[in-house]
Length: 154
Figure 1 (cartoon, rainbow, N blue to C red):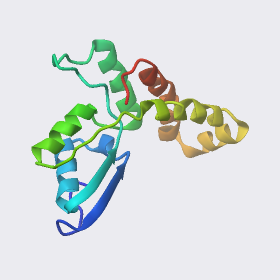
Figure 2: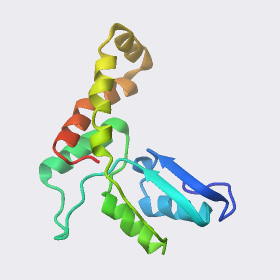
Figure 3: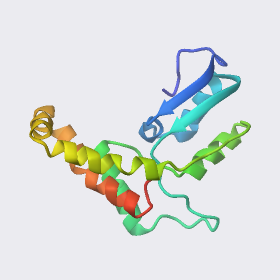
Figure 4: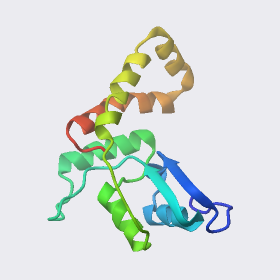
């Protein structure tokens, strides 16, 4: 995803769904989205983020860093960034009409729903058949719920 086989300016609409959190180099990731988009094209980035730092530039609190590290380790992800970090990266590429939105209230119910599904007979047997990596990810779902409840994960 960091170097697509398309010429620059190919696409009028790019939708990146839960990809950014898998990219270690966020600047390269958004740069590639900018490169393959046609002039005036639309780029939609839907990704996991942590809370914004605020104007004073405060860093994440130790418990927040710990929770995010546990989530990232469980899902084999590099460090996340905030929505405002993505906006700054997009602005650095001189893109126009940049908008951001926090969909957390609409996404947060997903995690308890997945846990409820996993706790059915079919869910448990599927989980056991899927292997240790999937089980490790399933055990991290309560961490995601905690992150949403504490307004940390976005």
